[in-house]
Length: 378
Image (cartoon, rainbow, N blue to C red; front, side):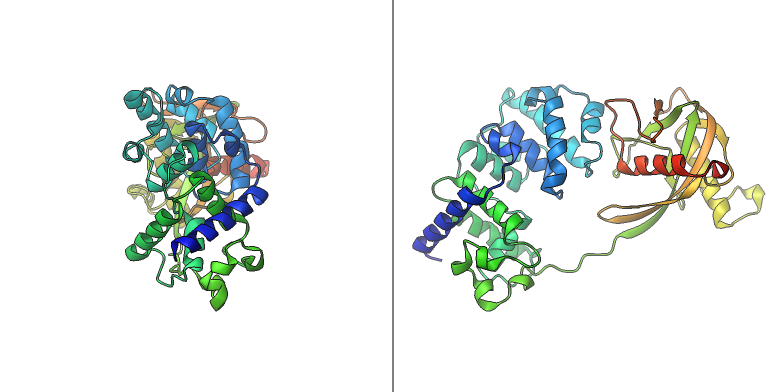
């Protein structure tokens, strides 16, 4: 594509963006790197309409970069609770703390310094650089990659290194010119509203005259993405251990729910979950019950564990795992002094009342299942 053609494409995209862009709260704060940073992290693998209420609450709670940096991790996870992909929150928290420690609380203008921050890769650094500082820095996310593969007719598999290298080179060439931040946002907006994964609106696209895929009728075939590996299935047990109106929550230390509070939980096939040697039982029910006993013991919790599940199994799907959770109940719960457990109040709908505690959606689903089960099953 010649320099003249690039100029026409940029002008068409910017003109379209000026008339079609959505009214989004982070665009009103384009000069605030912190607000834009929060939005970019939240929008990773999450739809805009899902992010909007969380974004508003998060910035109300932590209105400045320093406010977030000074917050405890539990507070941050509590504000993020329900949005998912919790590693994002931990990396954002680490990143703003490093900005305070190394750069006096100001997000660095230098691209290399930005990319050195925890959780800030080339895409996020480019978004901050172009939108907040007006720098000609490229971005390539799922939307931009889809647009570029279609405009330039790139038919090589998207994950391949050479494909990615070419996409970044194209993005780097296209961002050069006036309003680099708006141009990058125009590309993202085009992918969200027009150049969509399925049934792209090619006739309404400002890039239609330059698009190879439209000319060749291959828009819906590009980009080439290998089939995803089906999510792994896992079977877990969770224990709703109560004392009066309070329920035991333990702070997770694993990669899945680390930093969040949840019910004592373990995999059915975890080491030591088989039936007690003296029981002579190896039925699935016996194995699950022993797993529930192990979940309590591992969390430093004692109590009267019921023999039968208190609710039907709960299904929960993550990006890479499909979980089936068997729900047991225990009463008269007591916590070991050295354990990570806390007794938290739960309302009539199974919602934890304690503020500043991050609770995974799976935990809410299990609590609701236990609350909704017939009393005879508890």
